[in-house]
Image (cartoon, rainbow, N blue to C red; front, top):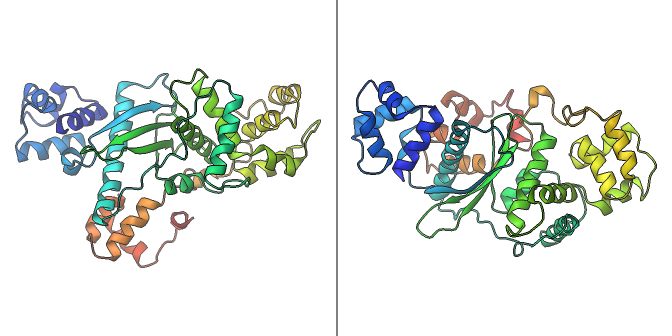
Length: 363
């Protein structure tokens, strides 16, 4: 486990074996580092400290045994992601999940487990993805109403959600965390903080679909996941009640109000009009060729302002657990600062209720 962790951290930092040895001031040779990565030997404590410093990771990341490995890592967009980018993302996921599992262990909590609402579904057509979305709403007793917070919903269901800075080409990824010792795998969905809220919510729903669709299904999984995401976020029956069963056109103010109601992108809203049979395919195609031609690249009237980019619908469970452990004196303030990746003075101010400028932490 140590060797794999070291290799991932080295790739994240962009070092070769030789350049890492150089960065450590020649404390060990490139050949020795290679042996560490192959788990043929373990470094001495002073070498380990120097290695962590050169790689800009803490010792706990290199030595912790909470996460054995990541399985089934699937980037939503594979094109153009370099080995270094993928390694950086995977190392960040491991580091975040390590802290998450550690605080759960301190609180003597079982890690929130993903309980599949039903066996994975075999899909032969894209239309079946719509039925799958309705089936999940029924299983989770969600009714037809818009989903106010996708992140909170998934965390309640046992999925770890991470919002981090990803390469510009990647909107998200899904993976399973292997904790070893026969423990249940922990599903993780990662979304790109740099993307607008509308797109982050859609990505969460899209990645959720990958947990529900049987891998052997002949349908195009990416397209089916998109159809599922749109149907799950914007229920057709609810939409028809809001806007009517069949329309020749929809005005811009109506569309913006609806995108705010369902918290999806304007482009997704147009697609749902077509999929629900409210607008004809030609009407939607005309919209994308004319007034909506730029909507896939630039969101009209976004839900977040530039100042609040990435601040809404953030994962909150891990943060709550850290404050719980701190309040019960199960961890020290310095450990809480480390877990939360928050400067000590900022943590003190937050605990005293001085949250000016940090109101989004409570939204």
